Image 1 (cartoon, rainbow, N blue to C red):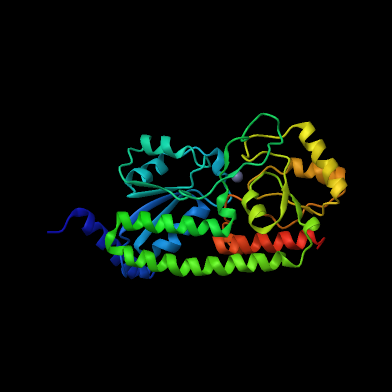
Image 2: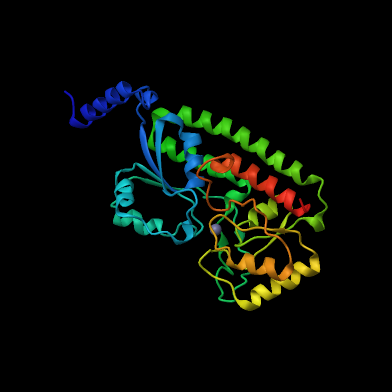
Length: 308
Ligand SMILES: [Zn+2]
């Protein structure tokens, strides 16, 4: 006997075929519906889930997950999902409330589980944010993303045992790409002397990148984009830029450019016209995947610190 849902999806498949759109959707119906909190995590889940998993992203490319409030339609998506992925470490702390209000009954996977956290950098705004808290931006270290991928595969296997072999295989081959990317980033920095590896950007999102690849980042704003920056913090930073002859100044895609513009005016440095992607993928182009985003950032950073 045909259930209505089955009938509907079959009708849709026929329609799709008839119009020539999404013909590949007829090949296999996704076994799982998953929701990921932000675009970078969404890409990782897609890489491991492949065709078996339909992934919706709550905070899309170019938006800021630190200060997100869910739309009613998104709460419905969450309510219908079998799996929800969040970053954890306080990055998408709104997720717990959303799961509750959406009546979510599925499995919640915290992708950073077991990842060794870094303390957030000393905050520059003097409000005491983040001093003892973990820095949530762990995806900026490719080696730590290997642990994300393992957690994602584990979560998918637990929700869909039939697909487990596929998820493991996908995780394995994506893991190889991550390994190669990690090497590539190390090589890109290898020829640049340590004192020259200094970058000014708008919020402290690159602590893990800094630690993994031996780069120093200074930011006028705290770890979260909503914490603001004080006049003293900015003045201190400007002094430091002059003392250390920093070359690289960046405006991030999700952050307010005002502070960086002030710093550029006062130091005579020119802000790089190439953006950095910290908490979000680009809507299109090279940085629209995690691998591409890390390549893009590395390329932009190594060029800027060398005054190019
Ligand atoms: Zn951030």
